[in-house]
Image (cartoon, rainbow, N blue to C red):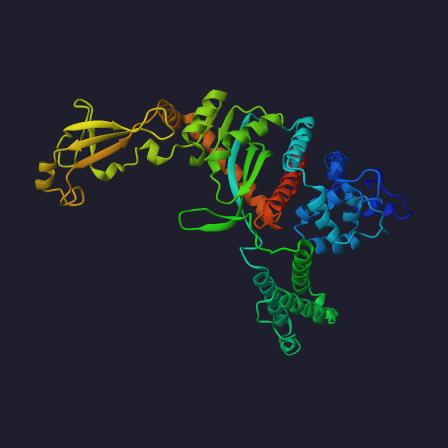
Length: 483
């Protein structure tokens, strides 16, 4: 049954908060900035309202998730710290002497209470609502980009994952005291998950009997991670292979296994919209959705900055329809026709024909491709094959035995012509200089808030992680702008 507290429990020790949690403490400022009771409205449909024992306050559990982001901690490490850290207890609405939750409660809260499909949109919308109330939304420009998050499971089977984490634990123990090799339980090398789970538990039990060793932070963290893996496997009763994660590409030579978060951010560095997808999705396909979500959140969009991934024909058409300036360079294959200037072919405007490096004029031309399609049409120029066969410059230009010699150039649409002209203006160049801001934001959420790696498997888990992470970064940014 849903039941939540509105005020801090009366305690004879509450005065400690006034002494130890100063007015400029991040958590006190967060409490003053946000009325977190809104979360009850967002999750109450996932609770029974009139039956069963009282549920733990959803506001408190939501705050636990925010603390995980702020301090980049595992469930167990966070709960352990909250037991002794009064600043965390203050933020959670606990009295100094109150006990804390069991770590598995957070797993159930994430899976059972935050299953609304629009939870990410709700939290970003709430943060932008606060920003508007505080008067820190002052821009009509947003920047779009996508950042990747590697799956925590890296496509490993449950046995592979358990073995990797038990191996990392053993390595850390041996770094501290190599003599423990003799006392370690015998490693399991078979293929049965139940036996690998048994070995992992034996390893944890053995280390728990060595309190001095188990209390060392590096070892304790690895023990907690292995224990969470065991419990999640038993809790979910399924493989820890991340079936939702997909392989995406950062460059032509580097790839990742995981997810993408498509982000829109204003040039005050407030995230105005986000969409979480699997890793293989194309950045440019979410352009219009990011614009529309930003506008729904109360942001007036007049200019959008992005990289070449967002300069597709559909996006140019959408921006024109919305009267939005799209500051995104065209793909060189479009702006330059896919040809290098050094290939020696030039255009003779008087003859309206291409001229080859040997100075021979094309004999005819033909337009190829259908008009008004997503792909540009191509103009193909045909050269006299007999001259090509005898040409002293034929090496690398004419293939021996070929029955024809052609040279093709992409025909730019009116949209592309307009964008090319815009690219050459000083306004475009000045606006484009601000695109770096979103790269800095991506770095912040990854390096400060653990967004480089997913915390749980599945697109749902990744979306919850995105919701809490982007909500926290927006709140922190609002406080900075207010100052």
